[in-house]
Length: 170
Image (cartoon, rainbow, N blue to C red; front, top):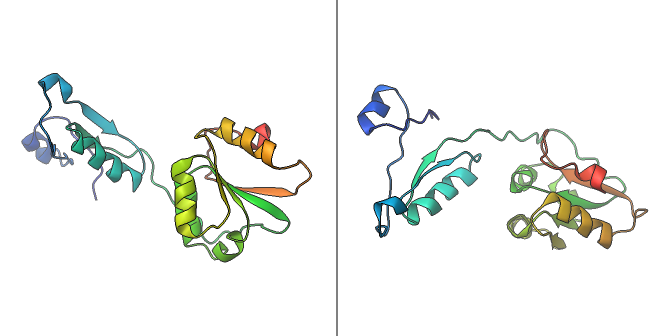
């Protein structure tokens, strides 16, 4: 699939070999100024869901993911002595869903950054999930309050680049 997006007309987009998403307006806005063209840069599959929500509200979403998530399911998880898992993204749970260490990881309690990630962990089958306030900083405070420093190792399932240095905060 070609991920290039063009902001002109449909004909111009086709001539440039780009993707232009049609605006699907479910209820007409009260004024033309209420329609916003919104650039959606989240990675898939979250990007498509966001586009659908925006279109349902009468906006014109433009899909242009800036990242592609690649799961490293062949890398073993070091769960020996681990007391809990930390997940700061639903993408980590998507990767874990097809990981060979899924069953072992599900025996551990899980701390999730926010409600959506906590719900995704529960849907995956985790029995003991603690949802955080939606930020890495808030999650670090929650974990520090819930666990003693001598509890044991915490395993943070994350990508190569993270938005918040959770390790330092703990």
